[in-house]
Image 1 (cartoon, rainbow, N blue to C red):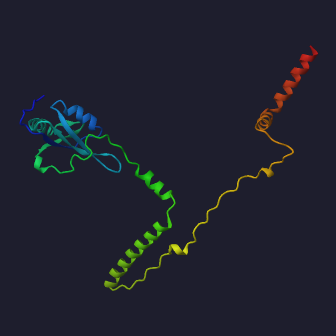
Image 2: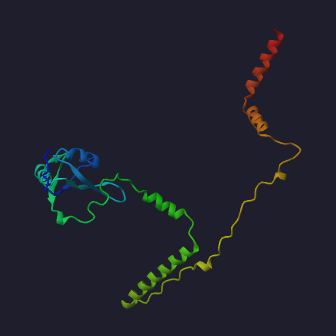
Image 3: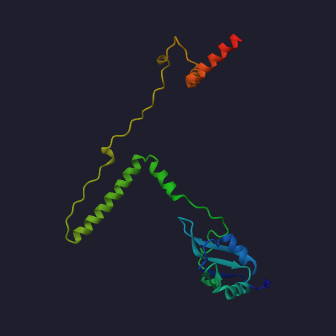
Length: 216
């Protein structure tokens, strides 16, 4: 492991063609043999979280970064030939280390979109959507008119044409609907259910056993 000098600035390397399964934890453990790693960022797809097969690693020493680039470039790793090169500090993008060092958490976009579609929408929201759609249709109609096509798009149904839903509450079950002369308890219901669930052959067998016991 190379030891950085006091005046040695940090160095950043780009690593391309990273094989599948070689993620942040494995990369940090593997490249730490060259020197201390300050930051590491594996590029991932924001929607699926899949690796984009390239990453950036900032070492504590620029000398170490140069050694890594010379040693690991064209290195065969799990069937992939790595592409490693040093990136000068003045060429680094300001957002290159955005999200570095954090554990990746996949965002369930499909689940969030489904919840958004299932949630009830307010009338004001629908009014804004209809206004935006009308503006888009008007812009398209103007473009068609400039091309020589006079096309009238159908009108959209307005929110005011749809009656507002009335709040309806379910009425609780009236106590009068249950006969007061024959009160039914939970224990009675369970007892009746158990008696109904007993097969008829079991009842006959139990009667025969009782008769045999009396005879003896």
